[in-house]
Image 1 (cartoon, rainbow, N blue to C red):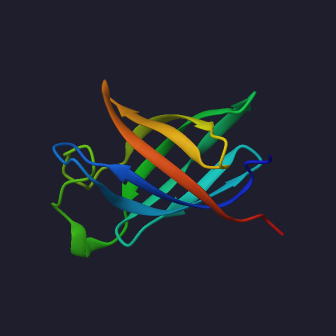
Image 2 (image 1 turned 60 degrees about the vertical axis):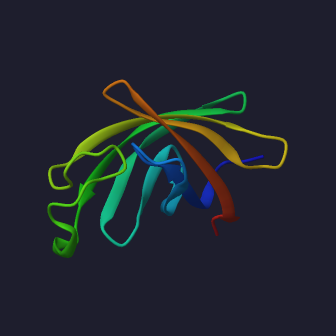
Image 3 (image 1 turned 180 degrees about the horizontal axis):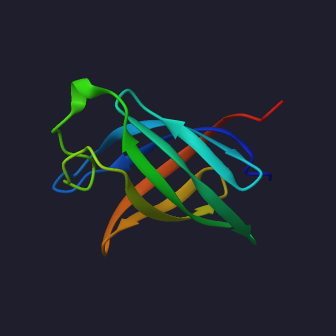
Amino acid sequence: MSVEGMWCFVSGEVGANTMESGGIIILDTQRIYGGDSAMAHVGRYEVDRGRVTGTVETFLYNPAFQGQEDVFGEVAGEPRQTDFDVTVNDDGFLVGSLIRKGVSLPIVLQKLRDLP
């Protein structure tokens, strides 16, 4: 299965027992683009035998969310680097972790569309 495409994702949050934060990302030739209503994401990824790893820079673009915390409990504002490590499961989902400063949060991605 090619990981290139449009994906929706949900992730955990520091201090929460649910996975409610989410957005859309596009994986395209080892590049990542995406976001949600407050944050944008750009980065790079690699694929090796069903494992996808990489780093994204996340930054606030919507001033209405200035001062609010991101999923890691850090005040949104300055760009932040986040690593990720996911694997393709039997159902075609990408499942794994977001990692920043030693804190790991769960993430699940579902493929919405292949790229044209």
